[in-house]
Image (cartoon, rainbow, N blue to C red; front, side, top):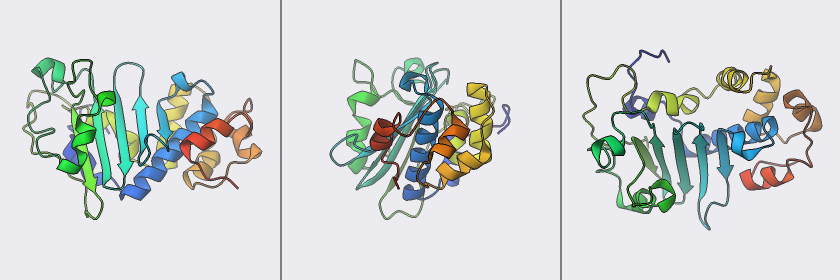
Length: 227
């Protein structure tokens, strides 16, 4: 996506796959980052297969204030994103931008009110929201009047969800090489994106300083398939 291209949550919603495919993609990105970065705090992407008794959660934090969370459960999937410099920030508007949360179905209200996605005053920290109930044939968003004066994505969706819209191994490789400033094996990325069990050879191609034993805890937390 070009920096001057206007992208909103409506555009991203049309590019997302089925819930199960998105969940597997998030697990793969989390597993790749666990291999690339032994320090959890330095990673962008994480996945907790046991976030609650009935739900798993994917998350992204860029260390500069932008983040997203995706809750996967029996009722479907709920995505909230926060771009801290967006003019649609609840801290600019003194509350969520009109339309972002107004149409969220009742089954996802616990996610809207989730303390982990809110500030200390209980206000949802959000600029973009997408959801899909089990059985739906598409992802949904609210009816939103976006600020017209903004160049690029007014709600931050284009940057926040770029690797969810473009799920190619090449896109992740480009992003990871830029972020980690190292050369990353495309074949190793493809291996993990296919959810094939990790091998020492694949790990060595990603990071020669980690072993399968080193990642045992991450593999369990992510719920990544094992051989």
